[in-house]
Length: 259
Image 1 (tube, rainbow, N blue to C red):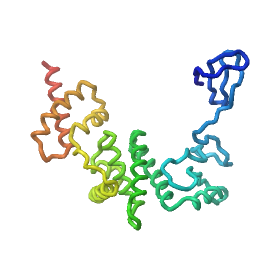
Image 2: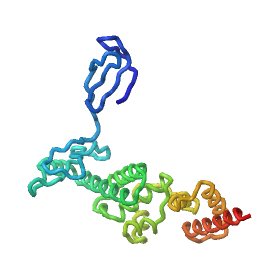
Image 3: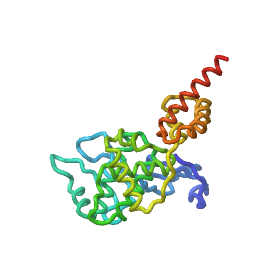
Image 4: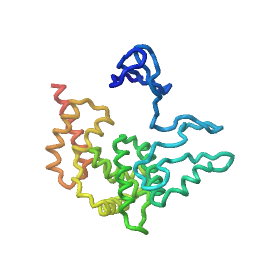
């Protein structure tokens, strides 16, 4: 429930504070309990209408703001007695090829983000990048490609400040590193995106320290070492510099504790 003051008054007691009961879909007066109005939930449909209940209670998604044509929602493709639902087939027929590509890309990007445990901000950013890519890429060029999806994730991670290396994403999602770099270059060219700054060790250290469950003081010490070490390890990979910084910082803290 959500309590909020309102500009209008209750007809029964002239109260001005109302509560929104989203479980029942009513707005109630806190003074006398009179129902003021019915609420309309603009979110996803949560009820299950199929005979067989699966793990996903959604039969449709929220409005897809990235589509140009079509219904604007993704209808469930659950099979009933071996056949797809008629409304899902109608949805496919009303959507353009561009919209179908965008919807397929959204599904793949969501799947990859769930596999990697990425933040919801990265998922939202990657969806926006991919929809712009689909709208601007030249006709008869390859679009629905796994390396393209991973390249979109790579760009989204960098834009949102959660840097990932080519090698890390390629290894995690089983794609070729060189093909990933090639698709990222193509993605930047289509979107006319500016050159992003190079990934350095300090971009990777907070996430690595989090995985190693190092405390905040240790992480700060590692960052201080990295700022010094990276000037002496020019040409080395950022993850190599990060590993060296963590090693030296832990050795320093251990020696400091012994003293």
